[in-house]
Image 1 (cartoon, helix red, strand yellow):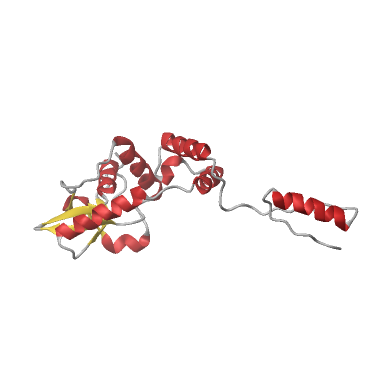
Image 2 (tube, rainbow, N blue to C red):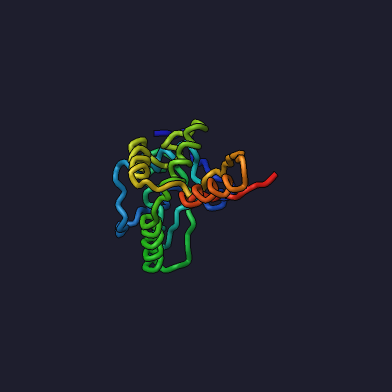
Length: 191
């Protein structure tokens, strides 16, 4: 356990920081975190600090997590004594519903395979480890494999140009027509 850190995170969260002992996991939480999920969250928080607050609501005299149970579990494993927690004004029933929707909306989104591969490669070149992005190495390998299998090209293509010098306008029109039939974005330049 990393007991040398009370709390580390984004400075704008400091007003929300409170003792971990005051915050309770939601016993009615429908979102279960498996070991690899907690480990990924723990690695990201260890490397980057806490960047967003967990969301909580009052349930009688207790403060209960409504979105962020995995973050609280990871911070406890790190041995931190404090956590940034936003305590909403919603009654617990509505706050749990919000937490459910918050978790499910993230789960129902999908990766853009091309952008994902490009971003993972950019981060790898910067020396960023998978754990710093909140993933295990095996999760990254699975994402890259799925992206490669999808055969989707990245939406953000780098534009490149090719200049072909033609002997005549007729040859230029012929080559331009063939390239456009192949689905390439072409234009003619006359000098």
